[in-house]
Length: 287
Image (cartoon, rainbow, N blue to C red; front, side, top):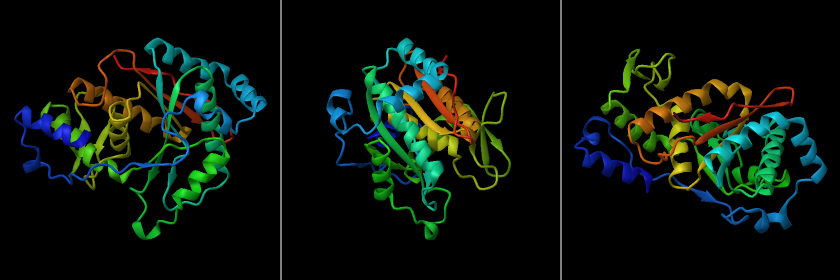
């Protein structure tokens, strides 16, 4: 269990985390769909593929350069297992045409990864962190079924709020390593950084989206065993994803568990533009 292991790691280093940063130690809850099997390989799911060959060909042709960047990054790192995230949705949202489009693009990306011989774990990250609980209207099972109809069989559904324990542990380690500076009344930033990369909001002291995403990334790498990440998101998330990469880089320098040591590990983005076109984030290499 990642959070428990990280607390053991803190204790070994003589860091009294609980006294200064109290933490709810409930482990992140993973909800795994009955279908498909967790080992999502081309041979095991081909009979269930709902992506048309011509549609896939058009997707690749229209985005050959961008997808080529991702393939180059995956090849350079020798990746065999990709954690593919897409279809981001808030618990107070109802799926609309934008979500359908994002699910379809994620399905096409998955199909391409399978056909070039990679194992794929399909993960939906549901935002239950920002909406008020009383506003939660999302039927997660229905949304997962919609994703399947679009050709993307989700293996794991993970809530954003469940990342709080892991994020708090990570912030505690970063603080002990001198990589955190105060920001406003309650906030925190990465230290020695050219940009303002928020770990905690300056007004409410709560972990930021980028911090929670970094926590999820350590689980993708560590607990799920992926050696590459691809997040399919609207282009408006570009800044947030850049902050996530910076937090992961600082976390790796601080020896936080769940981030592999080898160089050249890809953290990739496929960004969707409002008019329906796709742009790939430049594959990022941890230096």
